[in-house]
Length: 575
Ligand code: ATP
Ligand code: MG
Image 1 (cartoon, rainbow, N blue to C red):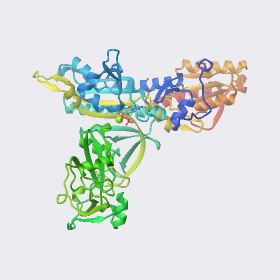
Image 2: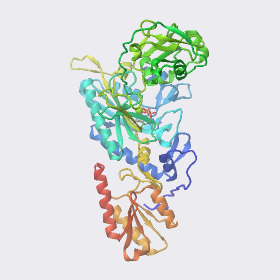
Image 3: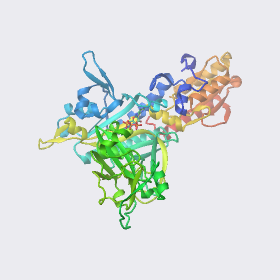
Image 4: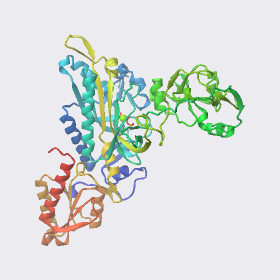
């Protein structure tokens, strides 16, 4: 391929709106262009990378016997009403109407659509198990689209859905997808970690996230320094402190003027924060919720949402003005005498003695509050947000934190959708049974961005060979020198003949510009044809290394072929 035909526009300047390296480098290297916030168009180089990503995924999915289909992005509202998600998905769902006023949405994910297909197509146990997938464009009206392809409003996802007869079958399908996903990300040369993920109200350790490690990643993960426990921080279980054995003392109201936060109260009264009770007031679906954790803990909203069984978007902080209705005063909220609300208490609190909480009157807190004697709750469960240094719930080791970008997630759905959408099969006795479902997603456009985060330097991208838009770039220093052009084309053709994806920089540009572009775009091997072309001498350089070597053109060609092939083998390339 001749670069002069490709009209690649690289940018010298850093685009103003881009913060992350991957975002900056994708724009600067001319891989893509922004159309509107969170929506991008892919140009030739970007398109090649996306196609490579898709091909890797396709091969690994096919290897597990999954079947590729392609569904529409336009979904009728009725399907989403059946599953209950027309409401539950909330404002992230792009909704629209046709000319007759009928409601539709642009699919952010396809559980409903795949369920509907399978319930029509599959009737007998003989047709199971089944795992269908697609590589397709998704739409999510993200609250904060940012970081380019990391969090966009339109993106490509590979989504797969497995349908099994029973739980055992689902476990198998899930393990297969776990393995396929590990292979996909290995082939991208990603440094990633698989962690337990939140799985809503379904329960069990039935979801894993594949997290590309990165200091700028949006996911925070916790892991144990001793055992293999690892989870997103929102998901990670926390250990309760042991029950306290001290004597219960009499409750006592004490004035705490101008003390609004729990730290101020503790300081004012000379108590450790672990002897206080922190209240958080919310509203969801027209009801008030008051949650309590010990003063030195943080509340984990994901755990709260799961315990309440509500969609994420339904939870909001209650206004101070509204709190009178439930019997409390902002800044002085305690657990005694609350009404018209759901009281939810962290599992550790009942075991604590003589805590100090709000007195539900302006300027006062109550000392020596004891669960069971002075107050109770509607729900008691783990509400704690893990912190670095906490004890591991599995082995007692110490929890450490890392950051990452979620590139894939796998999920045991069980019968959640088969129940609501009536996805059934007939067993050997002609009895109707619910199918056990799993769903599995990979961010096709987010993953290459996560790869760039890990593979770059001050000059640009350093693509792993498996995703590079081209394997080798032949840079002709002076295109007006016939010997240079001839040798450049000869090397280009020789490489192409051996199945290497090669691009020749035959643009009428200064050599410095060409080198800068080659580095920015991140092509793994550069062969430079310059002054010594007439003698058949060229320069060979790997993008990931600083130094270049002069050598005979035939040797450079052979070395490039050898390098690309061995890298592809190392990265598990199939062909
Ligand atoms: P996140 O927590 O980052 O919002 P999610 O858990 O909602 O992601 P899933 O529904 O699990 O995402 O989607 C499967 C995959 O699709 C994710 O692992 C991610 O790689 C990708 N993905 C999700 N949302 C986006 C987005 N807004 N832009 C780009 N890729 C996305
Ligand atoms: Mg996810």
